Image (cartoon, rainbow, N blue to C red; front, side, top):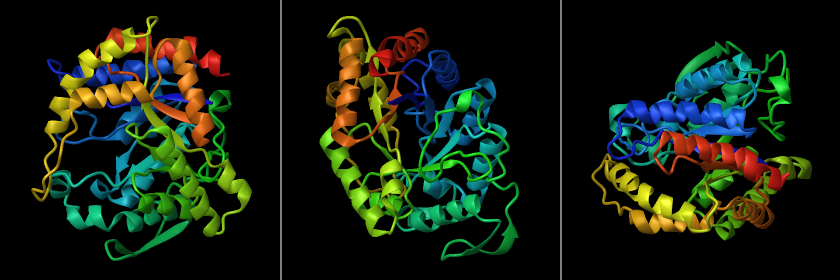
Length: 359
């Protein structure tokens, strides 16, 4: 069981972006100090839901401030990036961190970002498979040419090569298995795909790439997506040891407290204001109608699905999810209080109070 944190750098009402980013940095340092496995960084633009606009830039800072913990993006939004530029950054972070970087990619949403960065709606609706393929080619091949509908360029050399890692991370690192594992001298960074539909599940499965599954999904839905992934991976010709060895990641919320209702009460008081402010700020690129979740109901849903409560309850919920879905890697949002000291304490309790119950 590998437990990590999911960092949105959420800007709660009354806070500034600098406060949210400082909390993101400090919670990562606390995660390493507490023995957690990983930190996963979200990327958002123009909204206080999350104020980190470049997950790879923040990852570079955090990899430099830590020595053991894995740092990944959850996710870098491919329609807002040139895939070669993103793959170059991933190779650079992989090599300079000793193999501690994971590149999570996703399709994002139909937001105004597509207009600002020039990707356009087609990049969101149709361009993800081509962009993902180009990222993978860049991380695996010595020379790459762009031959798709969106990206066309002559063959160029890949510099630096992602497979030129000299040694693994200090302390042996998390030991990711399957394609994308950071094995010195043999492969590049782990690549993981955010999956929200059968189409994206099948796309990840064809490449035997791990999935990142959202915090809004319950165990039954996640189990169905894992089963679909395994079926599609086998149909794509991947051998059983590869299919079984790929480790997917489940996103969730964690809040540890001594009293059975204390953790839920804290989150129900704090999170709806952030959710209402953050989610309402999203603007669609084409004016399409969207329905915003009810912030209170959504918070209550998350508290019921995830490790929110005393340490034993939290451990039991994580163990139950692992048993029902086969997922043993978790990215848990620990900043739901919006408070720096409370977030640091929450992260520490995940490492000192919950993790021992799982190992």
